[in-house]
Amino acid sequence: MKKILRMNLKNIIFITCILMTYKSVSQQIDPYSLVIFSPFQYNPAYTGLDDKITIQGSFRDQWIKIPGNPSSRYFLVDAPIPALVSGIGIKIQEDQFGASRQVSLGLNWSYSRNLSKNSTLSIGLGIGNQRYSLNGGILRTPDGSYSSTSINHQDNLLPNGEIALSGISYEGGVYLKTNFFEAGFSASNILPISLNQGDFGITLQPHYTFSSKAFIPLTTQVIVQPGIIMRYVMGNLQLDSYVLGNIREKFTLGTGLRGFSPNTLDGLMTMAGIQIAENISFFYTYTIPLSTIRTATSGSHEVMVRYTINQKLGKGILPPIIYNPRNL
Image (cartoon, rainbow, N blue to C red; front, side, top):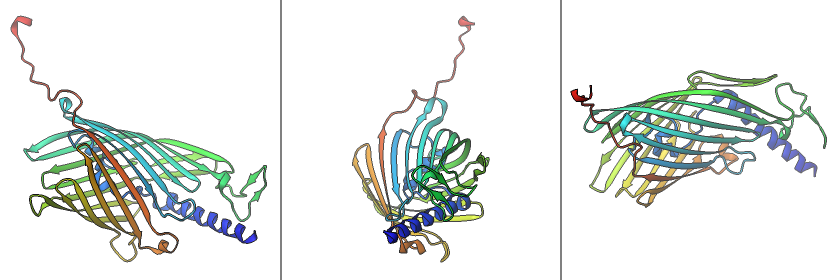
């Protein structure tokens, strides 16, 4: 019994330390791997650029086998509005990590302009609400006092019960899309969000994302897509590089690497996707850990389902107004 209690205490302290590091130091975008298929998730300028209504959802289970491991899920809907040469979309995301939970709800808008027949430049803005909560009731500290009726961590930085904080967030981005190349830059939490209640508080720092990918046709039915996603926040840089192979526009296979140096290597990604029906696609990735955390976990799983509707909001660009003197 004492051995079990020691193991539970060790796990709780371990998760708490990771939690504090994750929220107060790294402050990074959730490390989704499948966002390479969904730029709209992190860049509002991509809203409506697929020229059809797109509905997609994703779930990520990170660092499996670790108690209280991070899990994330999001739901996205975006659509083009040709009459306004723009797009609109909504994003809902939830992140659970140990005793912490973060929920965000956002509304995105984009405006695009054709630079040529095969290239489009888009800018986008987003506004949302970030809600962060911490269930202090499931945390334990070495000097705390606990019973069946009371909880006292003896630590002013930790709430004894559940605490919830919320604030408004802003984001912006730009995206260039051509037949052979795409690139985008975005900024989230453009204004730092300080959430405080009593002695407890966190600050959601600005973070920046750059992405690019190319489309290289090997044959009429095979296209290779190399690309990168760079994330930067608080002096920390994270790089994802990958290579995908698309076969007959139905099957996708690929691999990727998270990290760019011995000190930043985090995971090796394996990816697969299939177009189940004309408007339904399924994607999966498994990330093999390469950092020191590999001694405690066997990896991370992530799935995504996309459903498209080949329609647009509105009927297209409005014709020029012709003034008739008889109606003046």
